[in-house]
Length: 264
Image 1: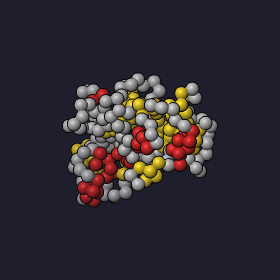
Image 2 (image 1 turned 90 degrees about the vertical axis):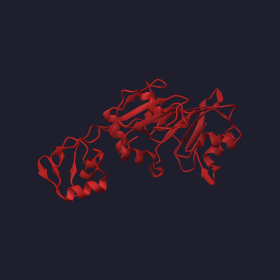
Image 3 (image 1 turned 45 degrees about the vertical axis):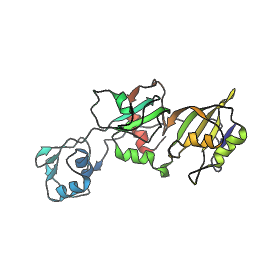
Image 4 (image 1 turned 135 degrees about the horizontal axis):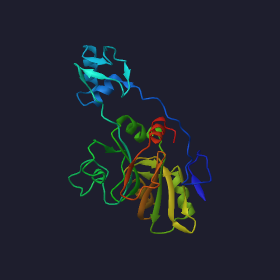
């Protein structure tokens, strides 16, 4: 039995999101000031001033129009010196227990960035957060625009978790999860919830888009259950398939395109 939040259409299936087709696109066009800022020499606002003063050329031509767009393949120069925009990196990690989702934490023994290894030189950061004891799908990137689209509540990116609890969950409590649990004065509701294993009702599949801290653990604790294990199996179209715990891989070009288009 699957329970779905009021107004949401039930699919009859749970942890099997549909795949959608996509095709490759032309190189991404970005604002010139963003390209300059990504190169690390200044902020976007300062880049606007450089453009207006005529210090920037694109493919050999001086540019003063603030609306100019370029690609990462264009020859952009500041006072004759070519600028190299920071290469965008997209990593899918299967996060293990015991690692915090921060770049640096003086109080943490391990961060997920440590798992990338000493030879990894790009400056990247986790998208969203998983608490120290939660495992599963984690996106790591240096693409700030994409991070904003994936984490802002208004976009409602799908997140699905496999929850292991200390006791079997009643059907009435599954229904309560979709009706909403009050946390810090806010009603937080699951988008969908079902038994992950029909033979073991202490294992629950839950879909939600709330970004509150430790939200799933707190929802179940409010109902009198203790979460023994929590694993994120799906985030914004990405799964941990073929990625062992504690390992990572780069996203394919197709996956990046689909993330940016919001196609998942």
